[in-house]
Length: 140
Image (spheres, rainbow, N blue to C red):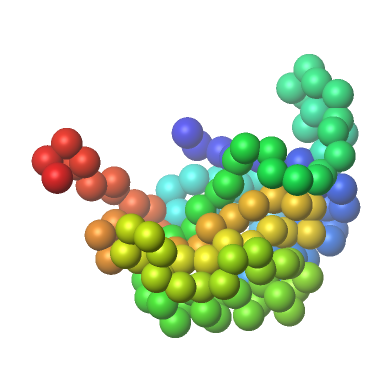
């Protein structure tokens, strides 16, 4: 996977939200591109994305079966990012805590209802560019 595209209701508002979390976006032809580790995150109008996928636009409400994850290097970074999320207009839906499998995580939704997990998992270290190499679960 190289890109994840989020359908948004207001491109400028969505860009401002993600920039308030410390990401820097570049607008290109009615989209905004962010570098997210080894992957690109794209914001695009919800209706235009639906049309491009051959679907009808759906309202942003409830859980749609997808959650995006953002791993960080420390518990303090999880906490700082949650503060930025709330200040930027996102909603924390699960407070930060040690989860059932032993690492520190939280969850939020952005202004368009996209679900995100923020986590510090020492078992999945981050490269300098923010990308991960998943552990070999077969050897565990």
